[in-house]
Image (cartoon, rainbow, N blue to C red; front, side, top):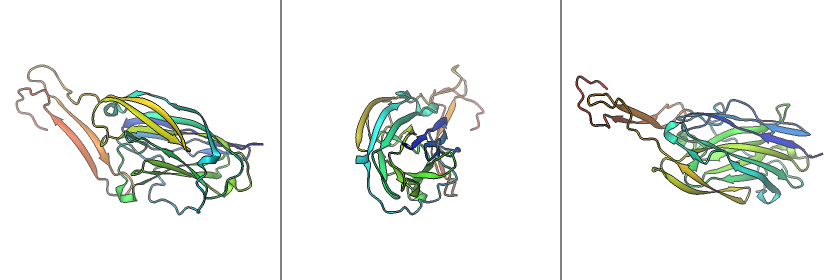
Length: 255
């Protein structure tokens, strides 16, 4: 009987980032993987597993053995300045056998990221994702996102060595890349999932930073955290602050 594996990521945003606190689940007959992503300025898909990438068993690139169905992007329009995000969902089936160390990939387009505003430079620019596990907690595949290449890599563990035709699904967060996409607009975006291309037009719409009381002497100030290191221990962050963008006449003001 085919093994089924489900990986779903529930995302709740606080600005432009991810973070998971639920393990993925799967079984010998039914493999379930359920990571949960919480985002604000940035939290990774697994806050307890971001120190470094684990040494992986050498294996084969098996995109040609992985069939993808039901690809979809949940939100086509979102606002990075108002916690806006989307999710990538896909079902997959592995044809035949794979072994420990074999892997398949998901390539993100230039306009978006998995990590959002979370900075991983001091961790080798690798963001460790929640593993795919069965209902008993056995790890079926581990996941890592390379921030520079924008490639997600799911690597199978020894769980798959004696099993055929593993099936499952996964969900990954989609956040705006502020560096490559600084302006609002419609962006043609092509996702390569296990070697297959899927295209979407994403409407990225930045909310105006001009916020405050509209009368002539009304205070007006706003700010966004656009880069934060949550996991190396440095706790460095970059914050953009807009002071009096309405150009009001302000008196006795303290920022």
